[in-house]
Amino acid sequence: QVQLVESGGGVVQPGGSLRLSCAASGFIFNSYGMHWVRQAPGKGLDWVSFIRFDGTNYYYADSVKGRFTISRDNSRNTLYLQMNSLRAEDTAVYFCAKAMTAVTTSTSFDYWGQGTLVTVSS
Amino acid sequence: DIVMTQSPDSLAVSLGERATINCKSSQSVLYSSNNKNYLAWYQQKPGQPPKLLIDWASTRGSGVPDRFSGSGSGTDFTLTISSLQAEDVAVYYCQQYFGTPGWTFGQGTKVEI
Image (tube, rainbow over all chains, first blue to last red; front, side):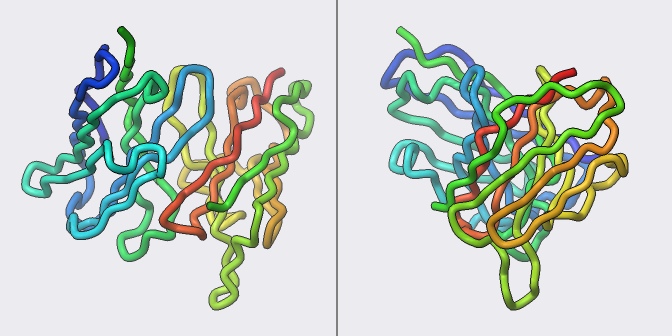
């Protein structure tokens, strides 16, 4: 069965950095685009970033552009999110999610990880 | 970006009664070439990640009970739970995947007993 397991969250000071990982199993990882979605405490869902199945194209929400970098290692079935210049408003649970279909970006998210909490505080 | 607006923000429904959640997009998410609405619904129970319930506005996901149904087209959509069960207590989100990149969610609707 499909499993997505995030790690790397924690407490970091404003201006600091963190690298999140998402280990994938149960599907052909190198055939699907992957997303990061975050959820601030008590708030709704906020899409963060997407990377194509082969890593050749990626997109970011305006709120993280220039600070976050998405990448993937298809040999390790792992998705990453490098987060730099962190701000208090980046505090959230970060979920990785699998794109439903392989061939297009216009697709829903069919599997989600349990999430990892990032807290930006001094 | 396409803005998704849900209503109501919360609702309380008796067990066995119908729950209806609305979702409106700031522009059409209907792709005329294939006549598909690029609209999904997710369910998020407390302490859990979201779960895909419905995509293409009305196609139930694998294993989703048939008391959940989606309808609508263009800019106006509805999620209906025909007979609310205790396990349906959750926050429900609509999402558009038409205007990509830029996948956007509604603010969520909390369903309580």
